[in-house]
Image (tube, rainbow, N blue to C red; front, side, top):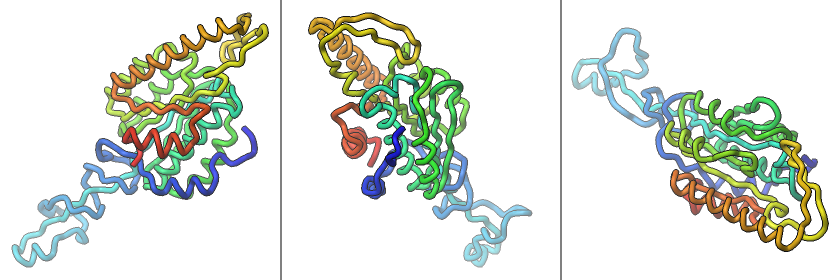
Amino acid sequence: MNGEPLLDAELLQLLHRLDIAMRRPASAGLRGERLSRRRGTGQEFLDRRAYVAGDDVRAVDWPLFARSERFFIRQFREEQARPVRFITDCSASMGFGQPAKLRKALQLTLALAHIALTRGDAADIWLASAGPPSRLRETGRNAIFPLAQRLAQQQAAGIFRLDDCVRLILAQPDPGPLFILSDLLGVDSVEPPLRRLAGAGHHVVLIHTLAKEDVAPEPGGDWRLIDAETGATVEVSMTAEVIALYQQRLNSFLTRITALCGQTGTPLAVAGPDQTLADVLFGQLVRAGVLA
C-alpha cells in the first residue's frame, strides 16, 4: 500500500452522519449503544420483578415500595455493542489495478468500521490473504486510528478462501451486519456461503470491487496472462474479437452475481473504477437501506 492515508479528514467527518441499519437488537456482548433483548442496567425501562436476596438495592423501585410495602427490582434493557463484521478479500488478485482494488476495499472497510465504532458498535474484521484469515476486533471511537494504521499496512497475497472465512464467522455468537468486500475472482460459488450466512441470521452485504483493467482491458498485442493467485498462465492475443468475448463473459458473470443477490436478499454495491467512495457509501448503500 502507498503512504497516503486510506481516508481523508473531510470524508471521516461526513461519515458521522451515517449509521448502519440493522434488523434486530443485539443479543449480548460488549456494552455499547445498541439496545439488547437481554435484561441489564441500561437506561430504557423494561419491566419489574420481585426482589430476591442479593439483588442490587440501587435497583429497588422505592416509589412502588412506598405504595405497596413490597420490594420490586426495576429492570432495564441492556445496552450492548453490536458486532459489525467484515470479510475483506486481500488475495493477490486484489493487488491488481491502478489504483489497486485492495486499496478501495480497505478504504470501504475502514469507512464502514468508522461508522460502526462511532455508533458504539464493535468492528470485527477478517482479512483474507495468504494463510489463515487474520482478525482485527476493535471497540470505541478512538480505535479508528490504530485500525487505520493496521489496514494501511495490509498487502495483497495468496488466495481468497471465502468458505474458510464463513466457517469462522459462523462459529461466532450474535449474528448481525456482515460486509463481504471482494473481486470474487477464484471463488467457485458465492451462493452456498451467502445462503449459510443468511440462514444463520447474518445481514450480509456484498461489495464487489472491480478495477478499470477488469472492466475494459486494453486491446492490442500478444500477452502472457498470469493468474495472480494460482500462477497459471495463458497466451492470448488481445484482438477486438477476444475482448468482445471477454466482455460478454464478464457481463454474464456480473448478471449472475446480481441475480443471486436478489434471490438471497443480499444488498449489492459495486466499487468499480467509475465509483468513488462517496458513490458507494452515500449513494448505493444508502439507497439499498444498508446505511441511513
